[in-house]
Image 1 (cartoon, helix red, strand yellow):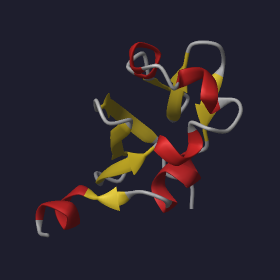
Image 2 (cartoon, rainbow, N blue to C red):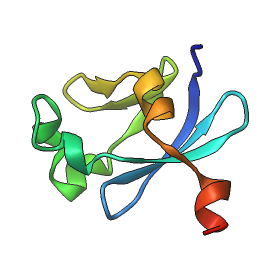
Image 3 (cartoon, helix red, strand yellow):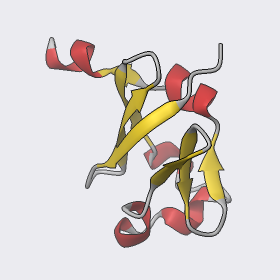
Length: 84
């Protein structure tokens, strides 16, 4: 199932708050990926904060992106987080 990202908000802790086309709001932790290429190039908080939505996923300057399926499958529903 392909779910497009329609909005993204970077957090100071290298997390992304995401809104998907189906209306779900989820949180994705980028920290595990920041040691890997090509994401190591966005490990600076100022560069990380330059994230935006393009073509249904999140992108950073320099052509860095991440598959929307990964963002959805490896994220947590914000309603579940709030309920903890």
